[in-house]
Image (cartoon, rainbow, N blue to C red):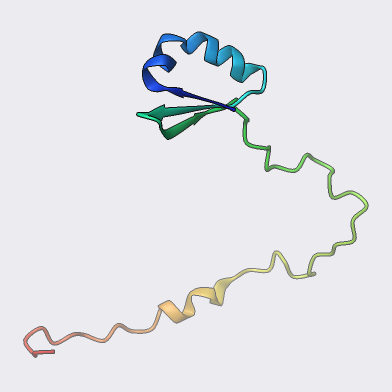
Length: 89
């Protein structure tokens, strides 16, 4: 890993990119103090599993997984209590 000052990095940017493409990392410094690292781009791994990737694995689903959820919001249907806006808290 080489360390290079900002002015030199601007002057030799194309060469630095070539070095990074070959697998090298470059530390860019301001007045000798490291401020950034120039490294190769690595795309994030694909987080989606390909179709069929669960084949052969032991898993099950409840019989009522698609049952209606009519009562799920009953807790939100309670009557709202009116607030007395004139009373101090």
